[in-house]
Length: 215
Length: 218
Image (cartoon, each protein chain N blue to C red):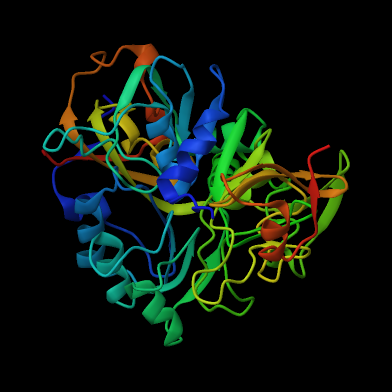
């Protein structure tokens, strides 16, 4: 038997793989909580696309600064050494290749590294793009954090081809799910890690794309 | 003597014409709410509104949209539960959805006189359908055009009479670039300081980009 990771578990697993010195943007959802699992003595600099460089720990209740929010409009703090830039410079950081890593949530990822995370249908009337398309094409590395299967019908979010409208093509390097860590390689998804008790075959059963064992 | 301060909200917003393109700064913080209320009172209609997002059910953007005097909204996302989404669904509002970094860069380009640029952002997506792309450096890129405003509504923490500004913490966001990209940048500032009180190396938005300043104490 195996136990899937909860959302905090996925975030903590990602945090293990972020080395000191990286400059990192965390998307909304599971990725936002990754910074909670990076110990402050490990100097990782977190960026928020509304112009914050060096996000610190969450503020204590009652001490929120109304002028300081992250991209999800949650109150944050700035750590010593942090800086503010305007919105065009902040996205120059993302688009100009200055981020070592961006972690985004997604609906689906394909075996060629396509990501779909902004619409569930091409004809969705109201579009919610935000900054994901900029981050996805600009960061040095794009990792995705998401549940392996959909909640209701248990469909695989790890796909041969994405069925939802794309955010960007061929950009995802690694996917962290509640079941496994998968690398996107030229030959497809390679399984780097699985939760304890889960077998390769059981993971493949829950995955639409073909999986390859780590070599 | 150059003095960009005006004494009333009506004076700050005077002359905004029907059909104007209005750049509205703000991202969770740094929205010039008093000026938005002033624009609603001023009454200009048939507006194009450019801002980060389409707002919620209440708040300054929702209030402005609810007047139905905005013809077109240009922004990076619209929440399904919002005044903007309901007006769009009812056919009362045009929407142009722009990736947030492209939106910021189009505004910066507008302020800088750049007449177009190519970016990989959104080039492989639905947003690129029917539009001009080309491969540059081996990557598919999408042609984007600048955004220029007739008016920008700007929030500042400090201002002097030349219009030099500081913005507090993350309230900076779109404020400096929107001031640059509009013919008429109207500022609400929390604090008024004497000329020279902002150290020159700490000016976030230079006065050259600012036309009118209104003191709105916090």
